[in-house]
Figure 1: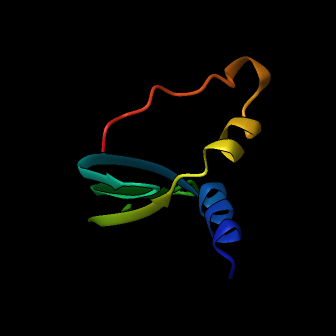
Figure 2: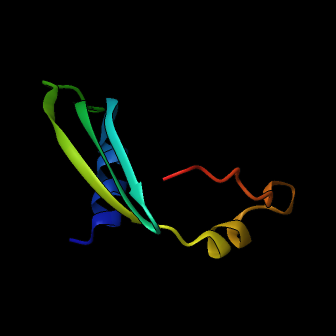
Length: 85
């Protein structure tokens, strides 16, 4: 099952509550990563026991500034302030 369909099905059938905590962020050039911890509770909308999950996640990102700016609404196409790496 594709991920988007899985998430759509979950949100239709479950009330989902989640908390995340950002642990670390690093960037170098156009690449970066961040990792976080999360706690998730999914409660069936039809009733029943909740499901709880805790864990860690890592995201690797690549800067694509031009495309990101073009995808924003016209009133939000300001360039972000550069940060030192």
